[in-house]
Length: 134
Image 1 (cartoon, one colour):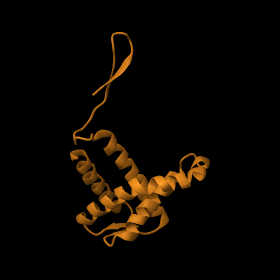
Image 2 (tube, rainbow, N blue to C red):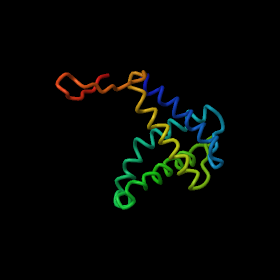
Image 3 (spheres, rainbow, N blue to C red):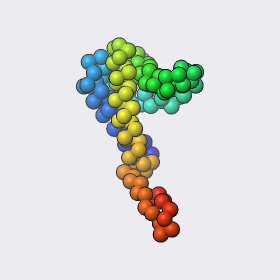
Image 4 (cartoon, helix red, strand yellow):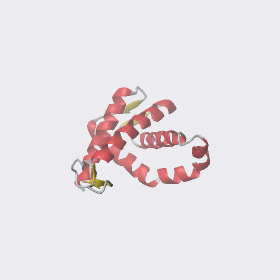
C-alpha cells in the first residue's frame, strides 16, 4: 500500500512536470495534479486495456507506436473530465503521454510494493549460472 501511494505522489509530480514542459497541458494546482494522477491511473487500469485490444491490428502494423496515441487519448480523457486539468491538442496529449510513460516506467521499476527502492542484482553462482538477488 505504501508503494502505491508513493508511486501516486511521483506520478502527480510527473503531471506537474509535464504541465511545465508542454504549453497545451495545464494543471490548476498541486491538488488537481493528485486528482488527475488518480483518474489517469484508474483509466489506465480499466479503459486502456480494452482500447489496446480493440486497436491491436493497427498497433501491430505500427510496431507498437500506436500505443503512444492510446496513452495520449487516456491523458486527453482525463483532461476532458476534470476541471482543474486541461489537455489542449493532440500533439500535447501524445507528447505529455510519452513523458509520463517514461516517468512511470522509471518509478514502477524502482519502487517496490512496500514503498522502498528495490535493486535487483545479478550474480554468478559458483556453477557459473546467473541468478537474481534482491
